[in-house]
Length: 215
Image 1 (cartoon, rainbow, N blue to C red):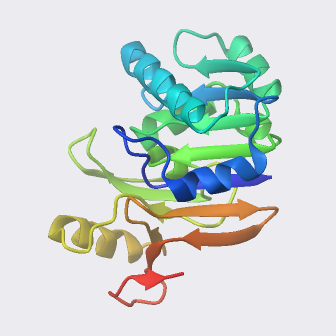
Image 2 (image 1 turned 30 degrees about the horizontal axis):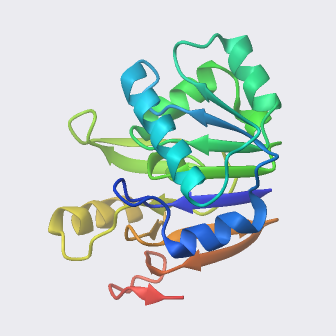
């Protein structure tokens, strides 16, 4: 399996030069992709995100053989069929908790674990980990702690900003429960058959070093 854990893909630009370089290593036009919503009942949000990322892939020369999405408009069986027919599975950003509940309700976890390439952005990257802990801005910053997809033992904190005191305080609270890798927006994790690579700056709470580490 190949995993991408993006912190962010810029809305007004699309994939960065480095993100493009990595994606073109193993994603091509012959593949089928399925996107899964993070807010499954917000259909307008799903449509906007799917269309946006479709255009981002097109900009780097990837058009895909077929493009599918999963949200509340799809039945459980339709969702399972989409996952089974996918070469690439894309976990959209938004609410990690709502996305994971939806995956569990639709019984998709085992099917996702058999896909060749899994891509996540923000919430979707968090849910690839074995454990997800964060303060949920969709629910008045309640602390969430639940089991993720367990595709990797790396648990990320996206959009990390060392100058943002609220962000730093949240990281401190979460890391007292479980170690996390904090990724600024430009950074991401690439995993190929279990071999992990962190591209860009990051902060490893296990090291307890407040300076960003450059890989």
